[in-house]
Image (cartoon, rainbow, N blue to C red):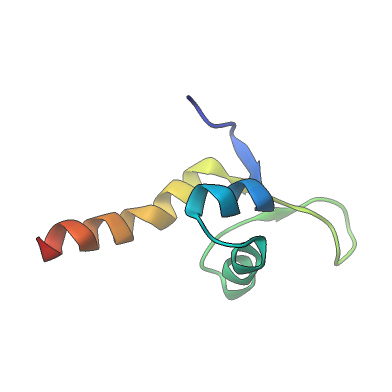
Length: 67
């Protein structure tokens, strides 16, 4: 199954196994890049699938190094 180019906060949360609140915290802290839809502070985020996959790379490498 291929993922779409952009994901919602909820989709990223499901993919990473975290809450949508955690995904928003990642965005606020700069851990995860996102684009806001609309001009209001409450606008929805869209996150590139490639950015989500990049977020997972360090964790995957750390597990491999521990073995």
